[in-house]
Picture (cartoon, rainbow, N blue to C red):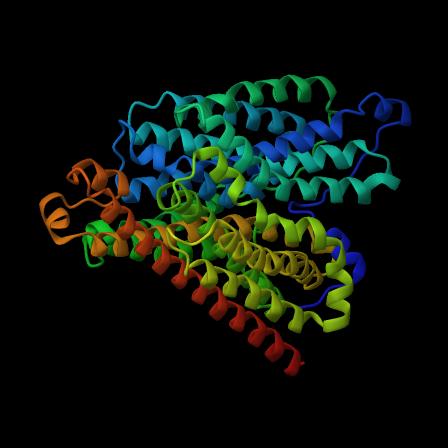
Amino acid sequence: MLRGTKNQQAHSVVDMPLRLQVRDTPETAADRRGLLPVMCACVVLMVGMVAAINLAVPMLAASDLHPSASALIWIVDTYVVFFACLVIPGGATGDRFGRKGVLLAGLVLFALGALLSAIAPNVPFLLAGRAITGIGAAAVLPNTLAVLLHAVPAERTGVTIATWASMTGIGGVVGNAGGGAVLAGGSWRWLFAAAVPISLVLVALVARIAPVSPRHERPLSPLGAILLVGASVTLLLGIVEGPEAGWTSPIVLAGFAGSVVLFALWTFVELKAEHPLLDPRLFRVPALRSACLGMTAIFFGMFALFYVNASFLQYGKGFGVLPTGLGIIPLTVPVILGARHVGRLVQRLGVDVAVAIAFLFCGGGLLGLSTSDASTPYPVYAAWLVVTGVGVTLALPTLSAAISGSLPPAQAGVGAGLQATTREFGSALGVAVIGTVLTGRFVAALPEDIREAHDPHTVAQALAVAAPGRSPVVISAFVTGASTALRVIGASVLVLGALVVLQSRLSRNTK
């Protein structure tokens, strides 16, 4: 059964391993009053970049890089994949070699990757930049919390954790609004260029005020991390390349086959390791397996929505990039107004019922959004965003508590790391799946003459070759593809939610 004590729920918001805390003296802590805002700013920057890039997709599609539909998905997902797969190793590296040093190195890598992305002359260079920023983010995120827990007095630990965790949600809003403001200048390159000075300012602030914490001889598993990244990338390769290369093409089949082999090797290596970073045996616990699936499914739906929302509002509704960034804000209204009431609601309804309702709202909201077209008034679209947001608001703290509550207190750090990994992996998978469905349906909905003569796979490609006056036909094909993609994602979230609840009930009945 999905469950968690009240105390465990309080700690479930931590998305990284909790480590040995060595406190400063009160005088030293007083000198670092700016530490919490600086660490929170680091988190907002790392998470905000996940959301902001979706706004740049139409600009990228029409840019001089001429990316294919699959390349657009990779531009979004490369950052998230490296972030997801390396976040636990990033925390372990901080323990081993020094949290402040690894945090600083992560910020420098993030700035370097953003700079490479901003000046990229072609898609491969851009993808390399995105990979470097993802590696940097994986080093930054866990060590911001570790540095905070080392510095703050014991009586402020709970408030500090809650504040830090809230930044992961605020980061998404800031990424959309701030990214929209930056991109309103007219170039996708500015989004990455703006991240460089921000990162360097944070480097200077962290170097000045962050404390140096003791190192711990925590074993590392570099082979396990490499295999996990490889397995995730090859899985997404099979999904993303399908529409353009063909589902029976060698690259797609090799991607799926390679993913199976690499996941199997990763499992073997982690089972044999004396101190695995992520022990596959944990998933024998039904409640943990169910909660991790639930967390993956929620972020699968959320980030699939982010990917389509940005293009739908710009292409389908004619919004500018800044209004598009602000257009997702109704999704966050339930989070702002209702998050503090979730605990009492779960106690009254029970965890299984609360999770079922959460998935009904989330999946139902996505299905509602799939009915939108160019003529749908934005308030109606925003109302469906609110419905989806209600489901997300109810699901996240409940599933977080379930993950931490499924493990003994000694493994609290493992459960926290699992939350980060499942969230980011679900995000990457959601973008890959919805991008794949969107591309396939968009191409099929294009007029036959445009499709056969030019074989376009993005809206920008189709608009570039369409005769004057035929732009509405191309936009209509895109809206059709977006509606189909959102229906697939909404139905998938509902099915996955049913599996989560069913597995939870079965695990409870077999005890």
